Image 1: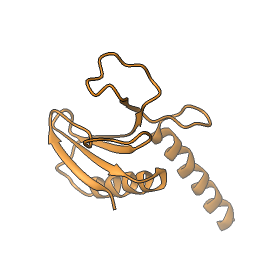
Image 2: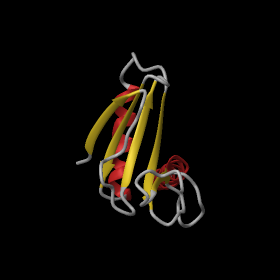
Image 3: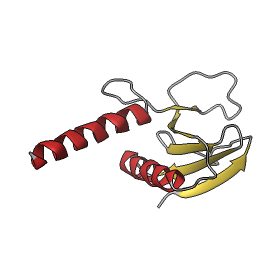
Length: 120
């Protein structure tokens, strides 16, 4: 399961990230709290985002939330990067450049359509 790293207002990433490492971020009632979760792959990221969404929809104290997925990218030249080895950037689908929420929305729509067709 994902490793949770919770911070208030200033979010930080895992120490010593590896190229391609993924990190789900979740903000509830912006700008109150940002939580970050190191995940091993895209499937775990999607599963975690769905679980957090389901849990947060049941919590009446949360007025709004936002999610995203970042990847540690060592292919970009970033002179302001203090580590000098890469930077965290928002993940984009290699197929169409969409973000994780757009990709998941499309997958959910396909699943719902298939379910409706099966019901006849």
